[in-house]
Image (cartoon, rainbow, N blue to C red; front, side, top):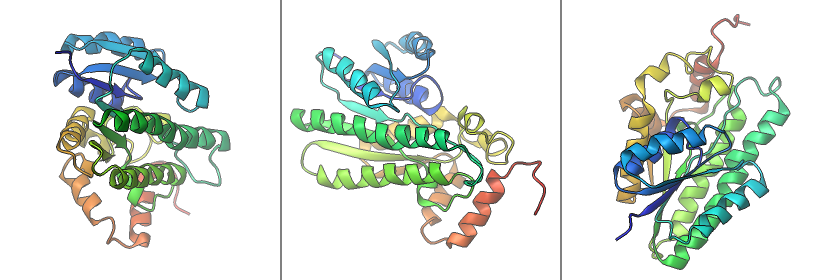
Length: 265
């Protein structure tokens, strides 16, 4: 009997790479994606865990990239048993000062790309009568997040999408789980321009991408609605986010995302 097949987007590094690794360790074959050339290196690395791995380079911030990626999956002629829709980017800084083009690209990847691939995956799985979907949101998706306003908004979309279609899919054999990581030791904060901040340096030492990925995989396999992934601080922060006043959330997030060398006003 062939292995089950999982697809993982944004899998060249960070949480995405580690999600792919955990799938491979649990007997899944893989289709992995990234817009970066190093997705080919990830393909070679992941084979050491015994999986058959296919890497597809495509930019999921574009309609064409999403369609090309999905067409390549269909050409394999195999049912997709699990999908980790994880590709995403961040942009840090005050909204009045951040780059519009970077933020539009963020929305295209985090929102449109997630929507596009989720649509194709859901239709495929419903037709087959089975499947598991993991959508990477963020702990920030339920927070007031100064200096990451557009990123948090995009992840709020992802979280709402995951929870809503989960309800629609009840009884179809398809489950949807939202992965909500806290600050994790990846390249995310450097790429977002947040490496010189408390959240982008000190916090990262506490949450490894492998641990986050493993928690996400376990929640997915249990069919859970969502999981705050990381250490106990992340889980506590997530569980209290809906009762913490917006002003308190905003002050805490601003402090964490403020450049260390920024002078007080």
